[in-house]
Amino acid sequence: MERWILACLRHQRFVTVQEVNDAIAPLLTRLNNKLFQKLPGSRASAFAQLDAPALSPLPTQPWEWASFKTVRVHIDSHIEFEGHRYSVPHALVGLALELRITARAVEVAVKEVVA
Image (cartoon, helix red, strand yellow):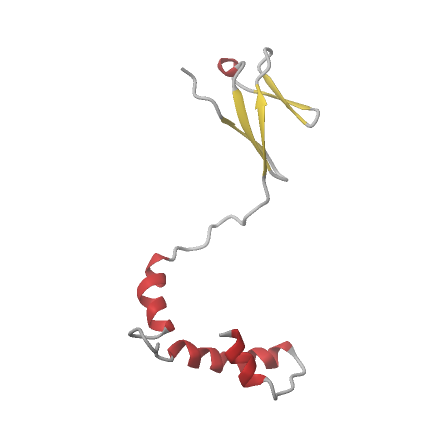
């Protein structure tokens, strides 16, 4: 697709990005509606039948970077991460926990199953 669109625009000069976008839009529509050579339909019809029904809305919260670390609960019911101590329930003493660290929070999940 990219090669075909660039080939159609290769002799034109553009001053702004908006001009490029305006030139690409009709070409993209034309390419998406062009019938396949060996299959029935077009890119647009294949998207409408296969992909569009499977799409779901974007999450309400934006994605944020997270790092993970495994820690063990100390005898005093605390875990330690980067010099900071966090208390957890006493029943988890000795277990390995998974920390999910973001810019806003430190989340704790049990990594080992309690038998």
